[in-house]
Structures are given as C-alpha cells and as structure tokens.
Length: 281
Length: 107
Image: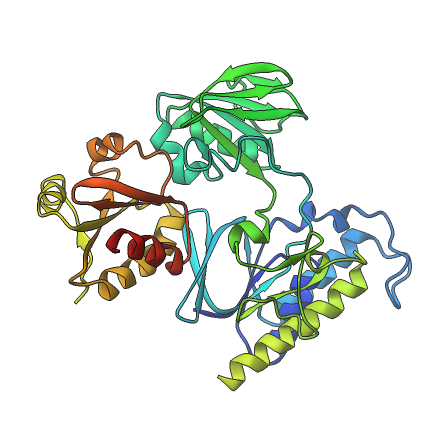
C-alpha cells in the first residue's frame, strides 16, 4: 500500500512526488515512458524560471532524477481503471493492481474525442484492454485502433493468442508483426446494434466482433465518472482537491495555461495537501 | 469468513434454481480490473448476506457459462432475479454502482 498514487510522470506528477516524498510519504508515479511526454521533444524551453534555453529532454531527465533520488517509485504503464473503496484507491496497470491512500491525477490533457458508437458498445465488443478481453475473442475477427505507441505490441499479443487482427491507424505502426494486415484510416465509426459487427474506416467496412481502442491515456473521467469537470478540465480548489474526497489534480488536466511552471506549482500544492491530509488522519 | 461463493457450473445452476437474487462476477486471473474490483464484490457479498447470493465465475474455468452469458468484456457483473437476467454491469465500477443495481433488483 502506497501513501500516494500519482497518475502521470510529467512536471506536475513529479513535482507532487518531490513534495510528498520530502514529507516522508511513499509515492508511486505511474506514467508513460518519459520520452513520450510531449515536453521531452521540445528543442528549447525559454520561459521556465532560471533555466532559459534548456532542452525538454534535459529538463525531463532532471525532474525525474530528482523524484527518484528522493525515493519515489516509478512504474511505466497505462492506468486503465480505478476504484475507490473504504478510503483506499485502487489502480490497474495491465494485470497489476496498485493501492494507495491518496490519489493525484496529473496525466495532462487528452487529445481526441470518442468515436461514434464507442460509448454505446463498450462491453459489447468495444474494449480498452487487450490483456483483459483478448482471450474472449480467440479465433474471432477483431480490429485494433492504434492511437498509442505501444498499440502494435498489443496487436501482436492478440494475434499470438489466436485473434484475427486488423490494425487500423493513421500512421505507420512500429514493431508490429508483419502478418497483421493494416488499414490506414482516420475517420472511424464502430458499427453494431446489440454488439459490435464492424468498424467503418474512412467509408469502408471492416467486419469484426471486437474493437480494441488503444489510446495513450485514459481520460480521468473514464477512470472516475463522478469527477467534476468545467470546460473540459478537472475542477479543483486552491488545495488542488477535486470534488472526490482524497483525489487531487495538478498540471494541464486542471486547465490553462498549459505551462511547465504552472504544472510544477500545482504539483507541489497537490503533493503537500495530500501529505497533510494523510498526517491529519 | 467471506460470504462470497466461487461458483462451479453445478453450484451456479443450483443457486439459480433456489430463486431470489443472484449476483455473479465473471472474471479471470489475468485481468487487472477484475482483481481491482474484487474487494468491492467481497463487500457486496458481506453487506447483502441473507438478501442475495453473491459469487464469482472464472471465465477460463467455466468457458461454457461465459459463452452462454455472452461475456465479451470482463469484469462483467450479472444480476439475476428468479433465474432470469435482471441487469449487467460491464467494466470496473465503484461499489456504489453495484450496490445500486442490486438494490433495484431486490426492490
């Protein structure tokens, strides 16, 4: 059991970890590989106090080292589902479950909307987890919508366990089994009444019984449907508390400006506030 | 002692024959979200002891039942009333969702 689970390993999440670890709290940061953080690709950053001209990569490396040196633990992976029960938060990454007493959401902003048919057919052929549901589709045709860097690996897994996979993405997948057919498409719609019957991809129908949608991050609202949102961002107070007890948010997910200094500041407040709340318990 | 039952096919069919409200959580050992909601299902079994029978079915052990129920995504919690499906909840959800669905079936 961790004191604090932190979703997101960018400036906000790492700042929260530094703040909480400094107060003796045990933190787990769950994040995509830092190379995938858009910040790490910035050639130069000019508006971070005292570090003009630093590269995004240098900055991310230093941020991460700082958090790790203070004892924060890092788990690379995607948080797929979350639950709160009797004062404990549970998060799943792949087939693993992590437990913590407080939760800080700092996973940035999600780009891209849901596909037509997606919400209606969740659990009726639409899945977000190849390792969870793949076995239920053995010997059956499935489509993988690849919107994450590691989506080709999940497609490989589905192929290995015996699913008939078609991979659908706007860009060339890297690391995918060459036997998996790939369709280049951008406009997608999931078809089916009671359950999935196909995927409409740029006007052409791919018949399938399952559609695996693999995105870089799961939106906080999909993790906790009761989280309050205002104009697309999580609603927080000055202590970075969301409307759900024990759940804090920091960084881009709380709103503009989408800037590093603001994320670091909010992460600090969230980390401190969560640590304080733990001490008061 | 937990009130949660690990159903075999025969045990599950017996529970349905007995009538009343039966809650069954379709899960698998390799499914993270299934493991995550396990404490919520345990709590359901304890809180509703005497009112509803709450159990789990491993989809790998009981493939026939999983197929019969058209399980396409797990975790999948099916609530049955007097032997017939009353409602189902797919995916990880908070305890309150399960409790609310069960309250409806019991009312």
